[in-house]
Length: 395
Image 1: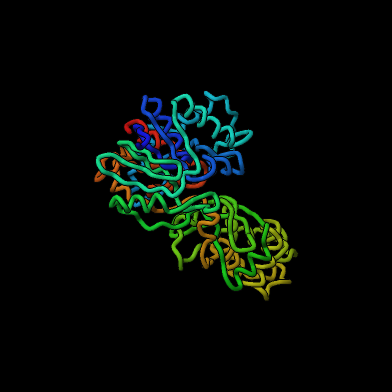
Image 2: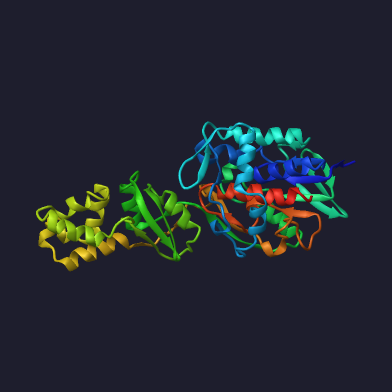
């Protein structure tokens, strides 16, 4: 005989555990089935091991979706302040790293331990190593896996996306959604470094390890944070953010001096430092190695020129280049290093109030498997908490 419960949750990550807690607190008998050898792997590795668990400035504008309004309901009913209250209830020390990004002072293990404690208090059953999972529905849902056969009236898909497969990510949630006739939008890697080919790849390789503040613009959406040159291409927060808006085959533009007008800086130097070499002036504002690379690319004949010897129009042109450096990525690093998966279960299939499938009663989709993707900085965790609460209150 199948083991009977009120709710089966597939996936023991952030969304699955939060949903289990909310449902268990309502007296529902909940079982969480996790395919990996332990729960919460992404929680543990996030934020460099300190878990960027939410953001003080969380709002619907921080999310991408084919339906940008879908996330409003869940986010407004379980806010960042609600999760912060839970963290404080468990006396977990945290800090604002900047831009509202909240991290544990000590370890992400504290967030996972908090969720496990809440699951224990709510009498949630958690099973790991649940492999070879199949699901059928005939009046109720029957889940068969390596740990046995389970049956319930409510089934929650909280299996996450495709990002970081070494952590156990798979397309199981999308396949299961399609099995029940749900529309699944095309997926791709988000919050992921860019890669380049040819001469540009060689340039980024030479500059590997150099970081600086910059604005990265992709498809008209710009982010101003640090960028980091790597052996393969371009990373850092600004590049990761822009990657979610980038389409293959299109350009990105970099403003290497986002806090100033580069042309004005050079003209000012012409007045105040007339005998200084162009590369010397630029190296006061940018890493010298980067200046030398740009010089070779765009003004090689000006290598030994003093700023006083260059016409204003030329200095303006150089300034424009620095603030509108156009690059064409070959690709991104893909799901291997992506922090999130864009796309997923079409939100038109779901109730924004409950996350229940409109055409498949008793089936719920939450977290990353849904076509809602946050910016970098704790927003994806907040979507996990909020969408999980929305479902957990009704399953």
